[in-house]
Image (cartoon, rainbow, N blue to C red; front, side, top):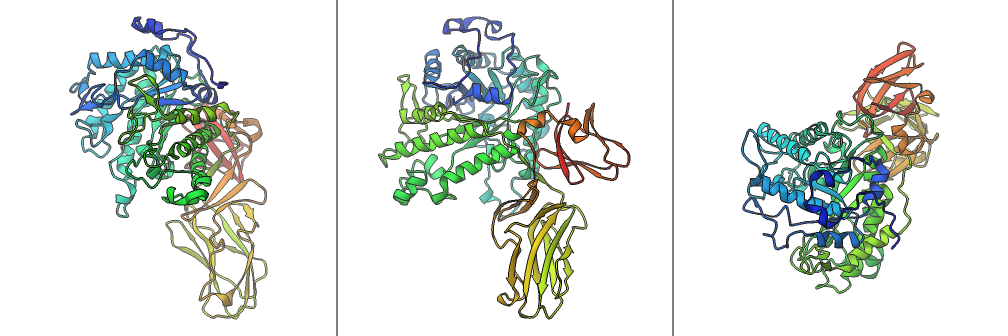
Length: 633
C-alpha cells in the first residue's frame, strides 16, 4: 500500500522501551513541521474512544464502558491498518484535586502517559485532550461555559494545563494538545426560541478557555513553544466555529520566534447527516450519495441534503478551507464516523464505505486531517467501532478500506487564493436606465441590520448613477435594491451595473431588464433569488449572495501561503515591530482586517509613511481599492 505518509519519529522505539524515562521518548531534535508537512505526516487518524474518557459516577475508569485496557498490540494494529495518528480522549473529573492547586492524581496521569507512550512507540502522532469534563450530562463535569463560577473554572483549567504541559514538556512534535472537547451550553439552535445563538457570553467563555490554554502551554518548555496546539469552537460544529458566530482564534503571543507560520490547528467534528451517521434506531436511512439517491431515494436522508448530499459535504469542507486552512490553520476533523446499520440493510456497508472515502478525500483536498471515531462497540447501540479490540483485529474492514482508498490517491491540497469578507461597505452605486415612467419612482436598498437607503429617480433617466452609499459602517446587504412606484405604468427598468467599494459588477446577476407593469407597486430585488458568487469585472472581488446575506469578498492574488510571506515591497507595506508601515498612500484610507474579515484598524494616510500598530498575526491591508496580505511578527 503506497501511502504518502512521512516517517518522522527517528528513534524507532519498540514496545520494550515503554518503561524507560521521559527523555527516552522525547526527541531533542524537535522537527518543526509547517502546516502542509504536518497534515501530510499525520495522514489518517483513529480515536481510542470510550476508554480513558470513560467514567463511573464522575470517576475515570478505563474499562467501565466495556472496552479492554489499551495495549501496545492495539497500537501496532492501528499503525498497521494504515493510520498515522491516534486521538486519545481523556477525562479527569474526580482525578483533579481541590483548590488552589487542583493537583491531578499521580496514578491516573501516569496511566495517561503510559498509553501515550505506547502510541509514540509505534510512530503515531498523538492528540490528547481533556474530554468529558466539559459535558453537562457527566457527573462531576466542571468545564461548563454557562456556569456562574467562571473565575474558579478558569483557575482550575489553567492549573490543569500547567500540569499536563509540564508533564510532557520534552516530547517532540508527534504530541499535540487539544484544549477541550465539544464544549457548549448543552442546547442546540432549534432550542434557542429565536434568541441569539450561540449565546455570546457563553461563547466568549469558550474563547477565553482557548486563550488560557495557549498562554499556559507555550511558556512551559522550548518544545511546547513550538508545538502544534488544537483549538475547538462551539461544540466543534463547523458552522458555529466561525468568527461570524462568535469564534475567536487565540492570540499566540508566546510562540517561538524561530517558527515560520502558525502553530494552531482548528478542531471540528463531522457526523452529517445524523440520521445516517448516528441514529442507530433509524432503519430507513442506510444509504448515502448521489448515486444512492438516484437508485433508491427512500433509503437516503432528506435532512438538509436530499439529492445534494455530496455537494453538501464538499461545501462544508470548502468553508474549512476558506476560514482556516487557506489562512495557515490546519483543521483536524477530530471525530467522524457512522454506526453499523447492516442489520437493517445489507448494502449499508457499501454506502458508508463511500461516505467515509468521500469525507477523507474532501479532508485531503482542503488540508485537513480526518480522525475516525471508534467507541469500541461493534453491531450494538451506537456501534461506531471499526476495530475489534477484544480480538485485536479489524472489525468493519470496509471502513478501513474506504480510508485507505482515499489516502492511496494522489490528492493535492487546494492552496488557491482565499477570499476575505469586507465587513465595511463604504460605497454602493447603481447605474440604471428608466424609460417611459409617468412618475418619479424611488430606488431603495437595505443594509443588514439597518433601515433602507432610498433615492428618487427620474422617470426618463439614462445611465444614471444612483448613489445608495451607507451613511455609516454596515455589514453587507439584505438586498441590492428595488424600485418602488405607485402607478402600474408600463415602462422598462434596466440595471446596467452596480459598483461596491469601487468594484464594478456587470454580470447577469445585476445586468437585466424588468417591466414595471408586471409587478404590484414595486419591482423585485436586483438579483431575483440567483444565489451564488459573482466575480467583479476586474476579477479582484466577489459578490457573495446567499439566502441570508449579500457580502463583498476580496479575491486575493497568489497562493494562500503568501499570507506568511507578505510581498512588502510590491504592496508598499513594511512590517515593523508592533505593526506595519504603509508607504506612499497619502490621501488614501488604510483599512486593516483579520484574515476572517473583521476590521481591526482604520487610518487616514496623511503622510508618505503611515504607521498602524497591530498585534502579531496575518492581516489583509486595504489601501484605496487595492488589498494586500501582510504579516506582523
